[in-house]
Image (cartoon, rainbow, N blue to C red; front, side):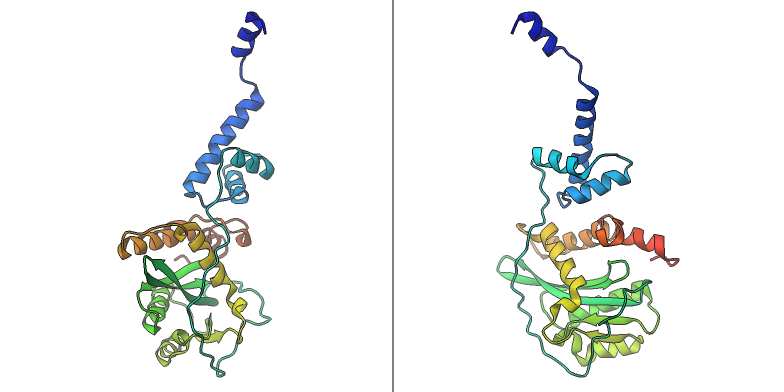
Length: 266
């Protein structure tokens, strides 16, 4: 190449296409970092659309691959240590029912474990199925009715649900204990449970635990129980409920969805 040719190549102005691509890449990196690495290309694309950025999902995926941006979530395979005890006196009230059309109509609850070193910390949560919002939670080192009851009371005090609310859970003893049913009866809440051997009946909670473990817990070491609790609390309040885009909600966060569809504010 001649000197004049090299000089012309080196000093040529950036094309408009290259400039747009570079600006788009910066926006993609910003969205990815704001999600703390939790968004893959579909959600990054949706976040950009909400910002008024016009592009294709395929372009977003290509730029993310070129920059090595990969979401934290992968398939999380865990062993569930829960031993289910089955009680025939409670039925599944959600079978063949349409999705709830308002908040505080159907809640679901479950508990899971989080490994911290050689010990387990247990997390119990309550979700409003209409908006996918986590409305109550509790953490502790023992898996018992105290844990699940605290999560339920957290949700009740926060949402003040009307009588007739359906609360769905699995058939674990933590949810079928007399003390738990006393709380449900006191607030006029009807209990519904999974069919025997059908954990998919509580798919909303299974999906949430898959998400939080993939986006927050997996490959993390926590210094102590306080740090773990603060991280889980921050994830639920400040990210999952407030910011995380859900495809089932039209790529709104749970709080945004409630604001769009409900008159009551919580």
